[in-house]
Amino acid sequence: MTTPKLNFTPDTWCQLNYMCKRASTEIGCFAITHPDDRLFVTDLWFPKQECTAATVEFDDESIAEEIDRLSDTHPMDECFRIWIHTHPGDSPNPSGTDEETFSKVLGHFDWAVMAILAKGGKSYARIKHDAPAGITDGKIEYNIPMGMYTDGYEEWDQILADKVSKRTFQATTKTTYPTGGLYGDWDRYYTTKGKLK
Image (tube, one colour):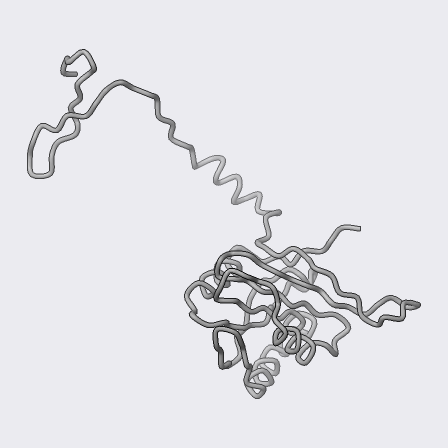
């Protein structure tokens, strides 16, 4: 069985990383996902929140208003199953407070994801879902990888292949010789034999 992955569009991954690095506190949001892939994040929404370096406290009324607004275009499965927040340090590991929030906010769903991006660049994600019939534990939880979606961008890859080339430099024994001027003129060279070229 292939391990699922929490994928982000390049724009959404860039936004999350940018906001993580800009904020001096934790910040929290929820994912909007693709209708055909509930683990493919295409957008983020941010309720009002009060944050510290170690906590995110959402405004319940703001969450309700946002869900009501989003419900016109997205079912609950697409906009309120994946909770993402940042850590202002290097560690993405969930704290006790994170675990409590995950359980309180999303624990009643048949499946949910908690994802954390640390300012240092490391990430953590865990999915929790109802256990199959016959398993008594009720919920199954396991870690999943998290990152930018890298497949299916053949058009962008083709642009890179067609339009972008890497400049190569050949080793030379030439040394630059400034010929003066206000900013210097580095267009003339001397070879190691001392001949002007």
